[in-house]
Image (cartoon, rainbow, N blue to C red; front, side):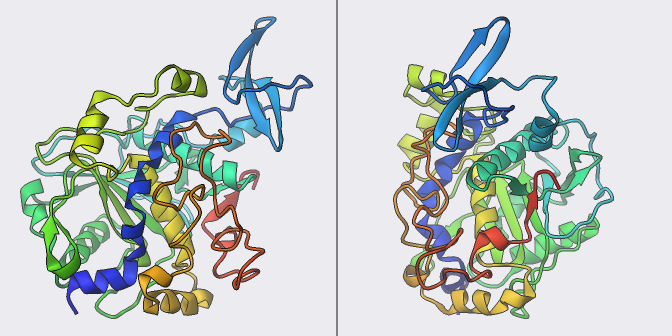
Length: 396
């Protein structure tokens, strides 16, 4: 079977949701707006709106079905707020994986090529900011929980690696047969001391218990579709979610930085109301050139992490689900056809801050992948991502 046919069978669901990668708009919009202090008595109407009362800044925050004014987060946040916003920049560059449990967590990696730019996103807070925004959205959907990240002394542990070739040479690894790209990543990660194996030649899908997510300072190779045709694919991702590996490419083919990075979008509902237009770089890349196909950086992480939990990779007791999904034609998989307001939908609303009532949510019908109480899989823990070991409770 060709790689394109094999890929369609295994991860065809990814192509069903391409347009939904634009979701980082929502992730970066609400940075910091979900951290709450004890509820105030006064109610409010617009989530994200701020006011100053007696020298104290307050922000309108949703609390269940009620909107309340609460103290805005600052350097002197409460203990609970600090526990929520656990990802902060600060660790210097490291070429090794710092000590930690290294089990059922997300390991972030920043990678460059021998001839490419190095923006030091591992140490300057960019990746930490993206990771924090993703967890803010996840906690808005699963209160009291967040994705488990690889941390060191309370800070995000982002490891730096260099891919030992030029970006141009790297493009040649994108082929429609075999697993040479997986072999390359396996070699790079293992030389960096990271225990990732793809297992594709042995059909060992779902065996890794960590999710490795790479931000690559460069561009990818061509994309293969039906009947082995190929086309250029800029500012997007590559993954082998079945083996716990996701990659986000940060450069266009001409070397320019891709739009839609952390901090690129409207930071609050107030500024969102003032301007409904996207920045010119986004229009050029994502509207004129590739309408509906742009992949903002954080949405790639969110989507691939959700897919990892849905599969469910790294859980031996759930191997039967992995095999069943692989053997099911893509259009018939349970989480493909979803409502418009489901974040997994290709057309789900993304242009709202985190916490906004119109922003798409996890499985609103509760019958496909989250807190299922309806449908044929209700109560089945291997198919419900709330039971994934990739979650951790915010207060331990």
